[in-house]
Length: 122
Image 1 (tube, rainbow, N blue to C red):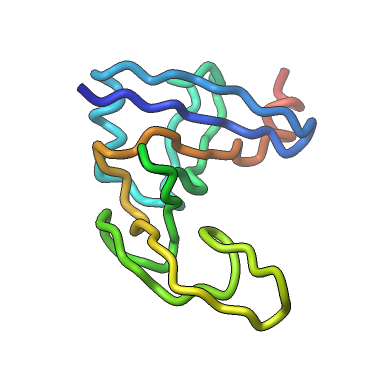
Image 2 (spheres, one colour):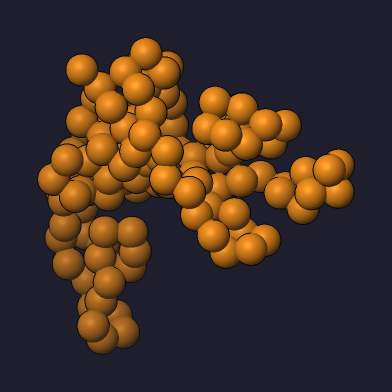
């Protein structure tokens, strides 16, 4: 029983929309990676493309684009996502996930690709 919340941001007006994806459609997202492009029709954005930019699992652990796979790893971080240092040069070992969407995901972050072109078509 997989269910995701997809948060889709529109960079033109700065607004975001949260869409709860049912189980049948959520299974098609499993296995996709950060940076993959989806059809926006399924999320209420007809004629537009949606690009996956990140996400987090049920424990709040963020996805990292530079780690392959969907498993958890403890890595040394000096910046976001996953760690925001208090002082310049500060580093810390933190738990993060790879760039693949798995069944453990709760939230998937995405952004509209070329939304200004879609506004011109209307």
